[in-house]
Length: 290
Ligand SMILES: [Zn+2]
Image (cartoon, rainbow, N blue to C red; front, side):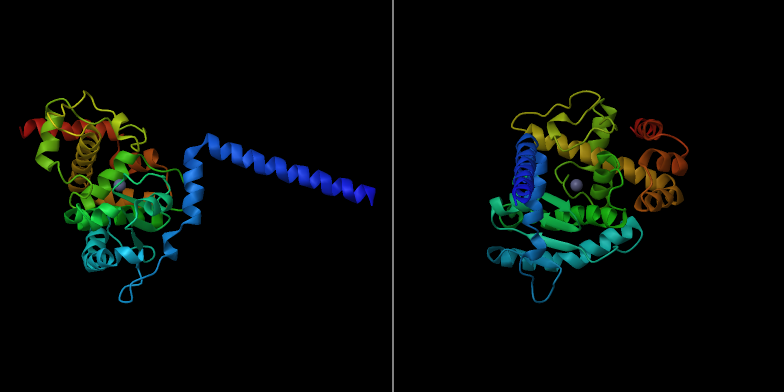
């Protein structure tokens, strides 16, 4: 019996140590904690609309969810046309009325993000049920671009650079998440020396997105969203140029990435150059069309 008791004691101490290690790691890594909270708050568990089981919402966001359901067929058609194939599986769209619930579900722990895609779910901020309702359709399409792309790409494969996935999403959604910057303004900023730098830096911190020179924000401008929208729109006009200048190359790149290929070799195989080299060609065409 003594030996059994010591084994139990040993296991108990081991379990306690494991719990303490997990707790310490969650405290030290807020992103990990937010992701764990998101797993426990999967919006697929929210009630669905009777007419459209793809749309889930908090009961208080029901009217907004119906507006999302109305916008959904066009948004899906737009993304499938731009990406060149159907969704791997029907998307789930979640609509929130409560900021805290949205922050818990979105995997970032942050309510101040317009939309998030995660694990096949497109999630929309409570903004879109209120003062930013006019952006609902475009941000819905933007998030669906991510759901489409990552729905095909095998789990566990390294993420392509964010300039590509965000540029693709803005292009495919006709400007979703970059509404306040036009294609022409993005092109002019590049001509003026404020081009975004296409490196592997994550674009989750919008204040850290690298530009060749800091773009002037102007009076009353909100720097964080201005930098985000300018960078996204510049990436979008570059991705659109890649598609326009070589449609077959673009299709090959998309299919390779959806199949799980690493970004740099897939880009080189499709375009015979690095993204930086093609960006140079692209900006030369902008200078020529000044
Ligand atoms: Zn995005």
